[in-house]
Length: 66
Image (cartoon, rainbow, N blue to C red; front, side):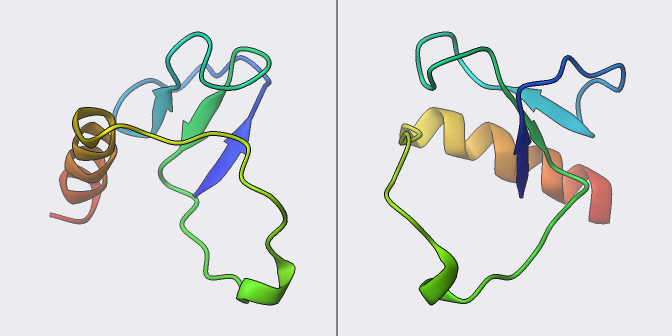
């Protein structure tokens, strides 16, 4: 899913506000922008979600796709 630091007008379930302090600046996960990437294109990790946070993102995805 895409991540942006630009404030979003669309709320949950289209976007999910990342917890303060997870990334270097306030950020939002754009749940509606699901992508696949080659592992070769990935750089170093910039943050990690806890189980509860990951469950929130997955629940929003399920809400979008039914």
